[in-house]
Length: 149
Image (cartoon, rainbow, N blue to C red; front, side):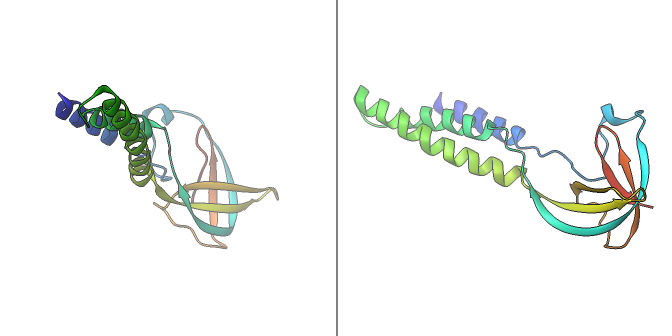
């Protein structure tokens, strides 16, 4: 029983760990067919950033799995309870670390100057790297993107 639960919990953790695609050339189905305003701009600066999606699912699933596994420790009810608490704490920490490792992505933060003089920041994936001084387009919509002109 415990092995089945742990297997199911680990499978759920792996599914929960699927990171969103943050690249400028990726569109989800609900983003297609939408109107975006486009402005010309010049890239002022670029820096690498870490993007992390922490849903808490790793902590929850790890805590549950650790609690169940820890409850099998010892022979009396006190030992089972202490094992469950310790297992839940350790499992929660491990699940959180796994989720952060799986969901972390490298992104790029662009500071761009629009042709109207306004300066904005857009963070996106590393799929299309742009350089300082490069002329680009900013697509303002449900997701703002900076793309090569």
